Amino acid sequence: MRRKQLITLIIILIIIVAALAAVILGKRVQAQRAEAEEEASVVYVNAFEVSDVTAFSYQPGGETVTFELQDEQWIYTADTTMEIDAEEVESFLTTMSEMEADRVIGDVEDIGQYGLDAPSQTFTVEFSDGSTQTYEFGIENDMVGGYYLQTTDSTEERTVYLVSSSIVTSTLSTEPESFQVEEDEGSVS
Image (spheres, rainbow, N blue to C red):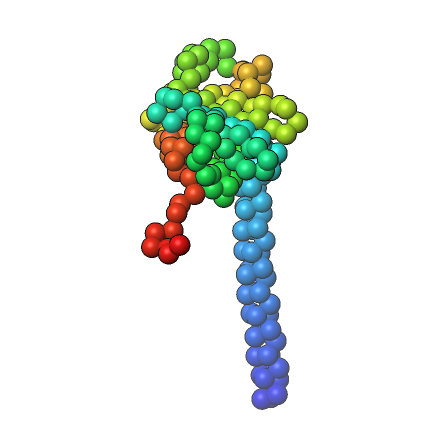
């Protein structure tokens, strides 16, 4: 009798462990599916390869600044004596190349309602194949947070994107001196 009870308890314990394992495995699979769906729903605004960039320009404070890659060195065209930190440039370009759209608005008839008839900021990037890509930023949407954006690729389609405000207020506000190589303080020559 005791042996039957022991076998019954072992069987019940095995069933409980199997059910618990199934629940845990099911939750993992569900979490992986949700993550995959979220990744699939991310819309990048014309992602580009940073290694293909040969020049870029934008307007922090209203003045256009331009950087060019010459002999594998980044040059600030307004001050060619400034030593540019390639890692800072790469970080800046990576942020711009990985720009995600929070919202995509298709078939826009009046780009003026998004401030794109007179852009508040423009970012232009030139690639090694000679092609260029221009990003024009319109007005900020205070309600949902973000700036409206149109690219040269979306001009024909009349597609407008809503992107994070930090792209304009932080990234594209970067002063040229921020790309300068920092000298070690306290280093002895």
